[in-house]
Length: 173
Image 1: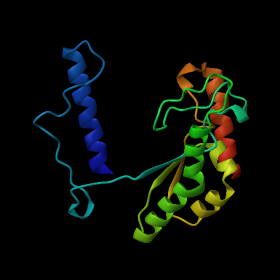
Image 2: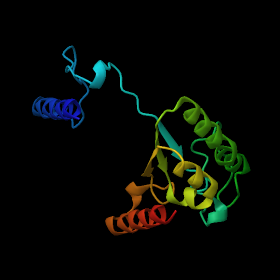
Image 3: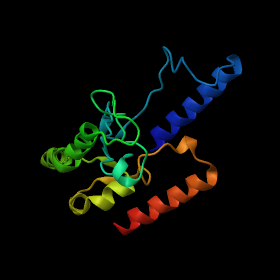
Image 4: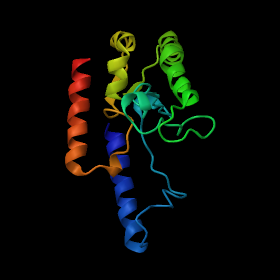
């Protein structure tokens, strides 16, 4: 943790220095040719964080009262007009909850690998078997919102309500 803290402080100082000389709010240079030295536990030279997203059943869909199904992460853009279900998009999401998550959980279990599960609360409400399986793992579960929705378009009060609802839901499941 000390090494990570030092890296964060170094990165913050680099960003402040960059913003002092550059009017743009983003840092495009990074560490450049002078990366920080970190002393990781056990002399490790690489840290890997596995992230598993569980969103199936929480994406925008007509059966949930949305104007349209989402096709954002599908192999091909959705051409379904507003008000018409995109069954291809829905089936791709359903594949993840019916088959994909189980394969991933087995692969992590066989290798005894930890992961962080970023889960939408609504998805876990609809997947009690997955919730039971996650309880048997050492994976961390991180709230990924109530549903798969665009928080940047919400006002602060609405966003706070959604976060509170998601937290309450994940606490129950």
